[in-house]
Length: 293
Image 1 (cartoon, one colour):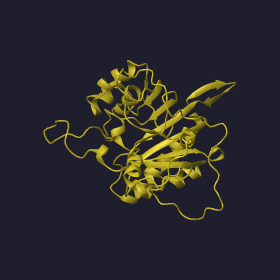
Image 2 (cartoon, rainbow, N blue to C red; image 1 turned 45 degrees about the horizontal axis):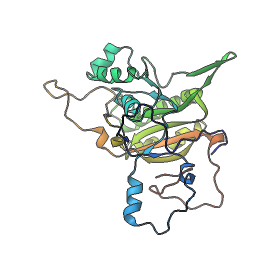
Image 3 (cartoon, helix red, strand yellow; image 1 turned 120 degrees about the vertical axis):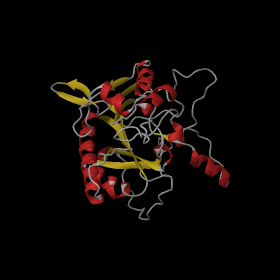
Image 4 (tube, one colour; image 1 turned 60 degrees about the vertical axis):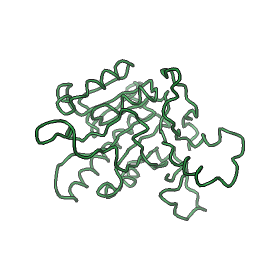
């Protein structure tokens, strides 16, 4: 991990945390978190303890981080970050051009908007992930990225084609464009987090290779647990699911599907590969620097 990389607090300050509420039990993603306790861990951990440690959700950001959310749907994820993870600097972007268009797709969105704006969160309309930015600060004539975490949950172009190969290509092109644009908004030592469903066709996108060609590398990946974000509901690109009578509801629930988050960092800021380690790591093996959990 690069020397300029920011350390995430193991026990971050939670400025808006109500008394008596400790918030969701989570594991902060940081290579340094494991070294915070100087006491040596007891050897021979029981299987029950290992399973409990493995089941703790990993949260890849800290409350003090400057966070950019890309491609938000009903803004329930943004609202959860602010209300339950006490994130103080959140900018949520949506593709829709106006509140009216967003409300048409997600009728309950105004409730989430009110929760976000009540804590000074920002919402920006008409932001295309493939053309956005840069978000940052002016330095001379250029804009320098200042986002610590750029998060894109469940990117998808929608039903552009029924042909699997074409659909895969459309999504790959979208992700490559997103990575290139996101790099312009990324602060030094920052990270880009993308979450995808497990299995095909998502594995066919080869997101690791797409990122590598954009100058990024995987710092780690881990199981995404929707339960770590109270109030969050997965939404489709085309809007809410409606029944035959037009009522909202029914259909599958995306938050119940297995999903995985990938943390990407600039290649020059990421961990250097160890030439002595040639053995492939298991997909479920925890590795704080470059592997998976």
